[in-house]
Image 1 (cartoon, helix red, strand yellow):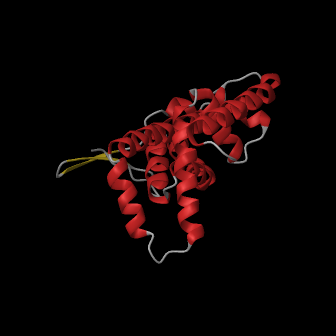
Image 2 (tube, one colour):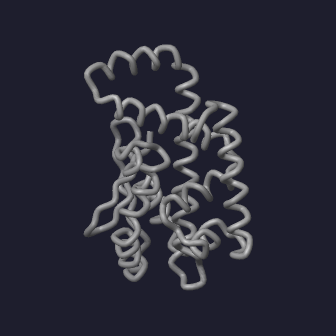
Image 3 (cartoon, helix red, strand yellow):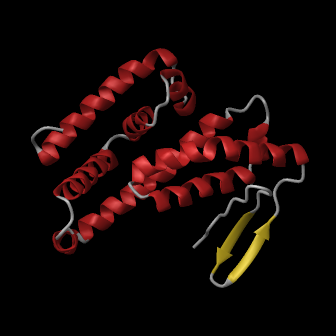
Length: 201
């Protein structure tokens, strides 16, 4: 199991395998190192927010956001002016988030009966709104996990507040096609949601 930790003052990527901890130093160029910290300060909160929307788990979101920056620390070429660094960050974050979402969906399918019983037991005494909200989030996550990858990414990034131009940049799309693709993704989501759960979205 690998874990990656980002330090605010000095960015260091560490791999932890079993009980052995190995420190991997960042790229030796001071400019790239400073840029990594700057990018971390600027983008980490937004990536955590995006990943929390995808996974529904703040702790998991922080773990995945740290993994994004761990990967970035080994790719100094992305700091060149001609590279689309922000686009790479969003693509990597969404890919990691969607992978986590699919794994969670598979786990829920395997543990559906036990999970339903646990939900009934743990929700006793909790506000009804909390229980219904958790159920709705689980449904939305299950639907997103079954969408075409580009549709799920578009909806998640748009929901995170990205503009059409930022969506085009992050997902390598033609700006003129973003509106049409978003409408198609929304229709795909609605159709799949109704087929799986029925009723209103």
